[in-house]
Length: 346
Ligand SMILES: [Mn+2]
Image (tube, rainbow, N blue to C red; front, top):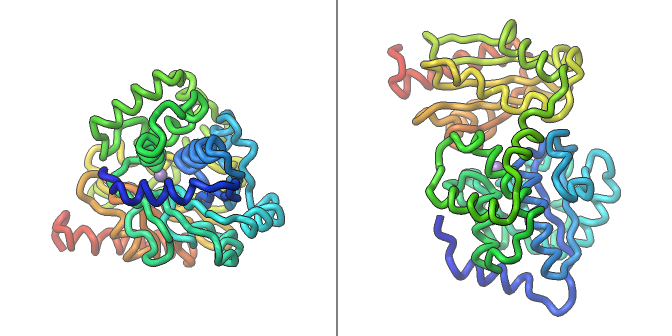
């Protein structure tokens, strides 16, 4: 990752003012560890520069992120729409963290688009951000997380002295969760040098692991068992898999936001599976999450078949069909894609 000096300088100029700026830090629907971690770390930096900062997300973060310092100060649009509209209307600068298109704000999109005067800055690692929307873009798809990117920007702008334990912990959460605890791709040597700095700042890695990975409810574990038992399908000669969860299934296990996070990765633990999908029904549509191994590109797959996108090995989209039709369609798409990529013969 090579951030041009002119972009760092532009950001520095934007944030160097005689009076404090009203700044809103936004992140995506169903905020994950990277969304929340990067928002809180960036908020801390902006506060240290003397600005007024509010963090806004469309809906609530999962419970396993509830321990992060200052997480309670994040506004959720679903719970307090007027409050969110007020801070967004007053913002002179909007930061977009960990997403590439304003539509990923879902219900919050209109509110954000109604503020036409704020300077918009993107800090993100998803492929293909909306062109011509942002005034300044830090778009680095080769960065394994937005938190790592935020760290690199802070390092360049202010040096690592401004990083305290709370900021370091928030950054580590995103770096850890977006890389599957440092097992996915894009793990450059510098990531480990960065972790070394975060450890020097006093982060407690075993404790963060327990908080994030081993703090679930019994319902969540039983939903996982159900997802990997009766709800798992493996097809295309053991090369593709899917999990389908209806609204009824989710209600039955008292599903909370974040409960099914990571379920989509489990089918990839089967030797030979190249693509995995989880379909979760909401009252409006079916949310599709996709994961893949190696060269199998689910960003292309999600864009082409499910009106979505993301990264090469992790992407998402939506379906407005019934669950039965969606699963059938997914099978057809996988078959077509596999034939095209010569994974199977027609
Ligand atoms: Mn991310």
